[in-house]
Amino acid sequence: MRNSILHLADLHLGAAPQPEIDERYRSHLLAARHDLLDRLATWIARPDCPVGLVLIAGDLFDEYAPAADLVASVRTALGKIAQVVPVITVPGNHDEFSYAQCVYRQPGWPGFLVNTPHPEVVWRGDLVGRQCAVVSAAYQAGKVPPGHKLTLPSRKDILPTNPDDALLIGLFHATVADYFPPHVIESERCFWISHREAAELGYDYLALGHIHSRREWLARRCVAHYPGPPVGPRLSDPGSGCFSLVRWDHGQLRIESLSEAGLLGCAWKILEIHVRPDETAEQLGERIVRQCGDGPSENSVTWIHGVRLTGHTLCPDLVEQLKKFLCEKALPCVVTAEGLEQLVSPDIEALAAEESLVGYFVRQWQEWKQKGNVAAQESTAVLHEGLLALGWRRTEGRSNS
Image 1 (tube, rainbow, N blue to C red):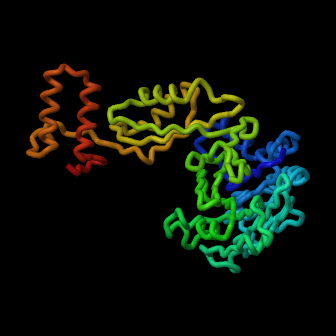
Image 2: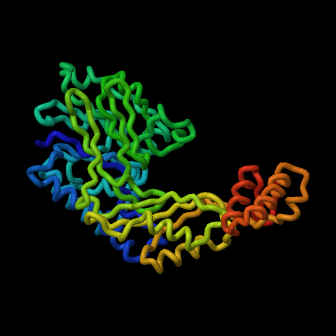
Image 3: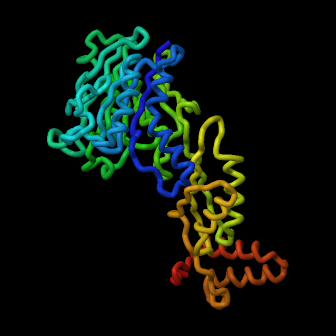
């Protein structure tokens, strides 16, 4: 029974993948993202597929004039989907409709293309016998100002008979102002919308794009949802690892996460690793290997491994040593260290001579180390954890003790 809506957004097809990805995994990621819609088309064509409507909430492409072969592939896939169920596409801010060379200005876009700059009903139909209306708009520079607030038509204007089981959907590439600070909204080349106002106007679902992390809020009976991309191109934009299926269940909308391996093909597996000051690249690498599992593939998904390092280190080339260690273990990873602070070894005697809390701690530490016959690695770890807890820092030759 086709009783579900497939909500897609921010696929950014054509975006360059992370340059540091090992070539073997890079090719998997490129293929998985390039062929994503084709795999979805094959799945949607199956008689047991629950999808009865597909919504694409902007930034299908990473730019307004993507490569011709990518456009041809996407059009073919969407054409296959549109032969089975309705498909509605709204441009985003990356593939903005304003440009004369915009991909969406090519004739014969498959399914329903939103090109109106002001909210209006773009599709009406039935979903398992339930009346459904989709309101949408496409941001267009020159016709609406940056950061323009959407003024939505009300339920009573769109569904005058107002059946309780009818679905009223808003499909927008926009920022929900209720949950983000003003600086995120102002001057954005997309709309902003009030979830509270949409709920008061009788909307059941806001199918949103623009925010790349999976988010969901409820106001009255109105659900607002960002699905995020299922598979992102970079460690900083990894995607959600799933698709969003929206179902009408006992008078309420319910969002399900679909993470079927055959549809994803590839996904990021990201570890957040806190580094201890005394930890070596080998010790860190062993921790990562244990957490990553036995291999790059699992349940037909090729995993792209990413590691985000935080904490403190005394090793100036820890990241490079770590990458080398992981490659030798046949586990190439994309490693980022924006949250890792490089420390310089403290002058223990100078600190011990200080008449300060730091000096008192260091003197106590020296006494404990001598009496306890503590291993060097353990004592070093205790020293640096204590100094950091007291607010002592020395990086690039500077001290704030």
